[in-house]
Image (tube, rainbow, N blue to C red):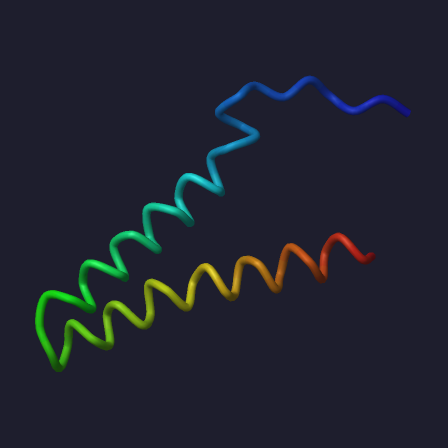
Length: 60
Protein backbone atom coordinates (compact mmCIF):
# COMPACT_ATOMS: atom_id res chain seq x y z
CA UNK A 1 0.00 0.00 0.00
CA UNK A 2 1.53 3.31 -1.04
CA UNK A 3 1.29 6.51 0.92
CA UNK A 4 -0.16 9.64 -0.64
CA UNK A 5 2.27 12.31 -1.77
CA UNK A 6 2.58 15.06 0.84
CA UNK A 7 3.62 18.63 0.15
CA UNK A 8 6.39 20.31 2.09
CA UNK A 9 3.85 22.33 4.10
CA UNK A 10 1.87 19.20 5.02
CA UNK A 11 5.03 17.57 6.35
CA UNK A 12 6.38 20.50 8.34
CA UNK A 13 3.31 22.42 9.53
CA UNK A 14 3.11 20.75 12.97
CA UNK A 15 6.87 21.11 13.67
CA UNK A 16 6.71 24.78 12.63
CA UNK A 17 3.77 25.43 14.97
CA UNK A 18 5.50 23.61 17.85
CA UNK A 19 8.72 25.56 17.24
CA UNK A 20 6.83 28.87 17.16
CA UNK A 21 5.01 28.02 20.41
CA UNK A 22 8.30 27.03 22.04
CA UNK A 23 9.94 30.28 20.98
CA UNK A 24 6.94 32.24 22.21
CA UNK A 25 7.06 30.37 25.53
CA UNK A 26 10.74 31.10 26.04
CA UNK A 27 10.31 34.79 25.25
CA UNK A 28 7.15 35.07 27.37
CA UNK A 29 8.91 33.56 30.39
CA UNK A 30 11.67 36.14 30.06
CA UNK A 31 9.34 39.14 29.77
CA UNK A 32 7.91 39.40 33.25
CA UNK A 33 6.93 37.44 36.33
CA UNK A 34 3.51 36.18 37.32
CA UNK A 35 1.12 35.58 34.45
CA UNK A 36 3.88 35.63 31.83
CA UNK A 37 5.61 32.75 33.60
CA UNK A 38 2.41 30.72 33.43
CA UNK A 39 1.86 31.58 29.78
CA UNK A 40 5.45 30.62 28.98
CA UNK A 41 5.17 27.34 30.85
CA UNK A 42 1.92 26.49 29.06
CA UNK A 43 3.42 27.28 25.65
CA UNK A 44 6.49 25.15 26.42
CA UNK A 45 4.29 22.37 27.76
CA UNK A 46 2.58 22.07 24.39
CA UNK A 47 5.81 20.81 22.83
CA UNK A 48 6.12 18.13 25.51
CA UNK A 49 2.51 17.01 25.04
CA UNK A 50 2.87 16.86 21.25
CA UNK A 51 6.11 14.87 21.51
CA UNK A 52 4.61 12.32 23.92
CA UNK A 53 1.51 12.01 21.75
CA UNK A 54 3.61 11.48 18.59
CA UNK A 55 5.76 8.82 20.27
CA UNK A 56 2.68 7.00 21.59
CA UNK A 57 0.97 7.13 18.18
CA UNK A 58 4.08 5.83 16.45
CA UNK A 59 4.27 2.74 18.66
CA UNK A 60 0.76 1.63 17.70
